[in-house]
Image (cartoon, rainbow, N blue to C red; front, side):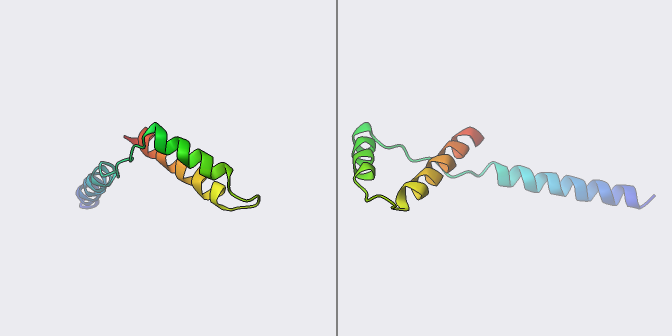
Length: 70
């Protein structure tokens, strides 16, 4: 019978940790249309085979995930 109160305490402690961690999300920086247009132009000017478009795509996905989590 001592196990049930212990499980309850552990369970409540874990829930408290999850709520604290999930409420702290970094903000998503907003960029003006002019900056976005310049970035698109520079991205198109990269040499073929550049790895930067892959990294930028990953960053875009991360930004969308942060927006959805908020």
